[in-house]
Length: 119
Image (cartoon, rainbow, N blue to C red; front, side, top):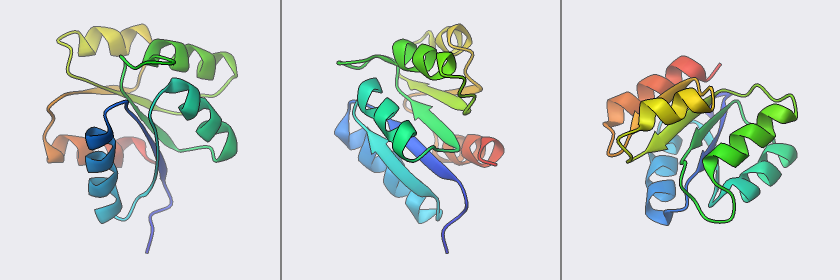
């Protein structure tokens, strides 16, 4: 039985996308993924998620541009920044994200933030 929350995982690293997707699917979440912000914007338009897990540094369109474009559209979908940068908290604040996860993050931290924000 799928949970009612659709999650969009946006990361240019295919192994991170695959791992996060697999973990969340094992927890019965419905998950989509995108390799960059441009593909993520298309995904949001086609099938609006309840939560976005967002890398910040990506080619084509980075996380800052994705978040700004999403908000400019009037979309208030919760965003969780996922980054290995030491500035994760600052970056999350810059884009008014709802939370952040510093890579590498613990499984419990990922599941905790998803459970809290996926409504």
